[in-house]
Length: 174
Image (cartoon, rainbow, N blue to C red; front, side, top):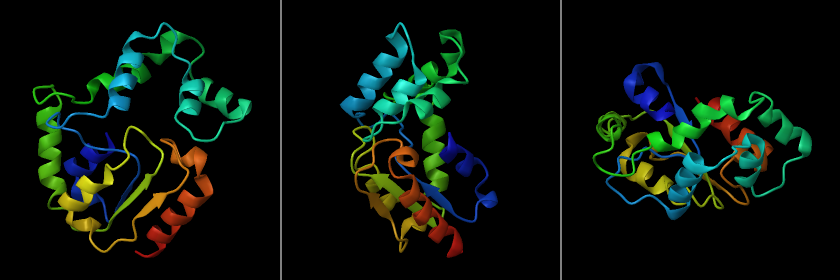
């Protein structure tokens, strides 16, 4: 969602930092981990958000943090948005969002302002995903990209202080 916003209004962004994300068009085969996540999100009888976030981390979250993630979802009827989000990610070239993501790529391929990549080494869904941004987004050139060692999908939980330091440095450099 965030990258499509950047593409829709690139003039509003002086710099961009992303981590553990992508902008799939469905033209490439998604990771097995993503396909498993998509299947789980659509078929699970219960959808415990805090436990799901904890499962996407390398470290174990405290029970208080898990409870905080669960708090906005007092029962499963509140999880509809979280459940459906993975099914909106294009996994085939003819998926409804494929063309919009392709259009976003055409804008990002012209984005020459600073574009920082902060991916982790332990996210089975997005590991290696930074390579496509390095190839296609001019603003990535010359930036101090980082691979966060020991971070899972949710970098802010596994390596929050390290990620904050990288982002603060990136902000200060502008």
